[in-house]
Amino acid sequence: MNKLKEIRKRVFADNDIRTIVRENRNKINETYELVMRLSCQARSEGLLAMEYEVGRLPKDMPFCREIGNMVRLVADGANPEFVAEWMTLRFLSENYQGLEALLYFLYARGILMIQADESTYRIEEFFQAVIPQDLLPFDNWQHTGIDQKMKMAEEIKAALSEREKAYLQSISEDLFSLTEEEWKDILSTKAFYAIDGVVPYLDEKTQTLVQSHVNESRYYVILRSIKAIEEQEICQCHEKLKLLISEMRTKPEDKSILSGFLQRSDEEMQTLIAELDVQTIALALKGEAKEVSACFFRNMPLRIRYRVQDEIEYMGPVRRCDVQEAQKKILLTAEETPV
Image (cartoon, rainbow, N blue to C red; front, top):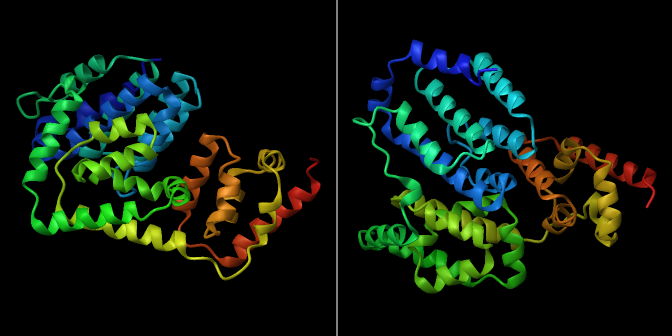
């Protein structure tokens, strides 16, 4: 099968590529940056590591969910022919046009190239072949070293306003207020990934603190993702961090139906989780106390944990009775599961 043939045909036959690129340079460059980050992540840490990178994406980013599904298929080891067919069917069912069609094609082809273990150079060549270089020349992303990126960060820091510097100082103070146990808890939440974007602009002492608590791969990605930031983005990071810390330190008043599982061994929890489906676990943990959720999360394979966290984020508001029903289902399964 000629992979993505139908998508490619529609993108180039039905759209004025030059006009689309001219009017949407930032969005296309954002697509290029993300695909290159995924490529570096996959080549250094393996395909499964891409799930972490996708977990950092803002939920309002174009194709956020589609990218997540593409990456999960690839990370799960799906056949490339099946992945390409799924991408094509999804494209046709949504009937993407114009900019959306072009972005979808770039993401789909880029992720397929990553699955095929193509080099970052080959992926960059693909982007350069699709996008008119006189309108949007790419900057040899994979050849941009960390030192250059850090120099860029220093130039951006020098241009920050006093108000922006004050927000960054508040973020630093909040990070230093965390205990070691709180660091473990807060890093397990996807919401904390939003803080990554401001790390390169924090003072050296705070950067060292963050580096000591995140894995090497994540810190490398933070440095490779340096870009200009605006005051609103810094302010939002500050507010989100404050909210995370507040929620983490607030003890729930009501005793959870699932609180009894805190007394179970890891082996018992792993046996139980193997009998449950992702949707039931996600619904049961919606709004749960952090210690109960942590009890489940630490006994899940990393891929399953990310899927559950995604389900929780995407399901939106739910009725309390539905949550309790899911929790009762888990209790019933636990009673029927031999240990």
